[in-house]
Image (cartoon, rainbow over all chains, first blue to last red; front, side, top):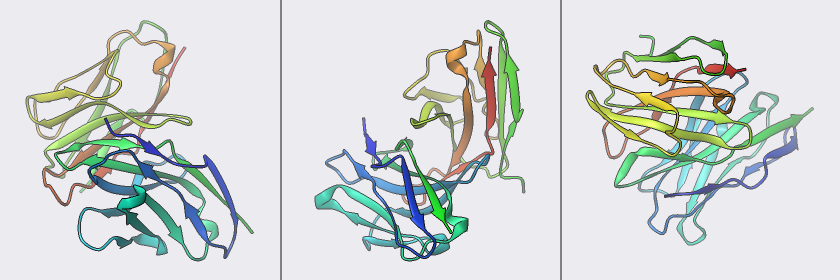
Length: 114
Length: 114
C-alpha cells in the first residue's frame, strides 16, 4: 500500500511570507498526486493535482506544486500567504492502476499571522 | 445540482447502538468512498464502491458495512457502535476515468459514540 508523509503537522507563517508544505510518497511508480484544503467544519476541496505532463502544477488561490520523481516529493508552495489561507492541507496519492483508492497524509495545519 | 450530500450532520450514539450514515450524489459518478478523519491521522478509507452492486474494503473496514444498490446512494452502516468509531465521516465520489480522477467530498458527518 502507498504511504504519504507530510512533514510538520503545524506550520506558521506571517502574512505575505512564502508558504511551503511538504509531501513525500512511498511508491516507486509515480502515482497520481493531489493537494486538498479543508477549512474548519467543511469537507475537502481540491487545490491541484498532478496526473501527467508538466511537473509544475498550478492550482487555485495562487498555490502550486512541483512533482519531483527523484525525490518522491510533491511539495505545495505559495509565494505570499494571505490570512484566508489558514486551513488544513492534505496531500493524497492514488495508484495509476487502482485510482479509486486514495491514500492521504496526516495533514498540515497552516496558521497565518498578521 | 447538490453534488454530494451527507446526512445527518451530527449524531450522538450510545455504545452498542446501530445507525446508518447516508451519502447521496447527483453527479452520476461511478466511484463512491467512505473515509473517517481522526486528528493527526488524515483521512483513512473505510469502504469504496466502483459501481452499483460492487463494494470493496479499504484500510479500516472493521465495524462498518456498506452496500450500493443504486449509482446515487452509498450508505455506511454501524451495526454496533463503539467509542473508537467517534470520528468525522466523509463520503467522496469520483469519475471512472484514468486522468480526471478528482474526488469530490461531501460536508461530513460528525459522530460521537458514548
